[in-house]
Image (cartoon, rainbow, N blue to C red; front, top):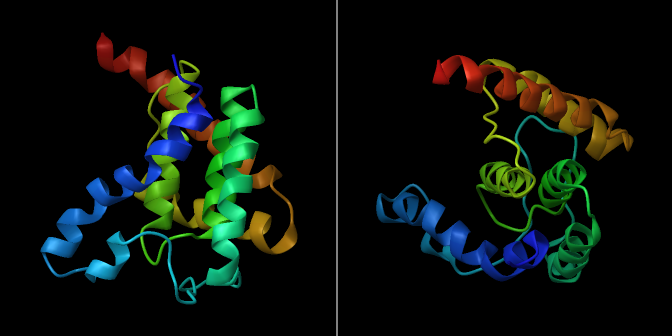
Length: 161
């Protein structure tokens, strides 16, 4: 059985391509988005946070993979992995969707349920990410993800009944 951080290190580009190939095929995204990490600056709409330069991405991603590989607790790995991935913003588009996918793969590795961030929670989600990215306070984001996972854990038994 492979360690989850190493699986993500090895497979994340393939997952990204599979998630976003339909967007390229339908003309929503340009093909350059599937080529790998971004090679241009990006800005996040309605956010004060500005991601690192594209030159920094290739340096930051190996550090990201080391971080999640070295963290033994799946829930901590999921929260940190999600936040750090979005902070680095390695792709031109789809970083939030990819971060939520990675978060769920890390949660699943610890036996936690697949956790959906509901549209109704988007403002709280974005505000907690902004707190972490701009103010260096990850606690609201960790609390938000924790509450989302707990809500999902409460919903799963009800669905199965």
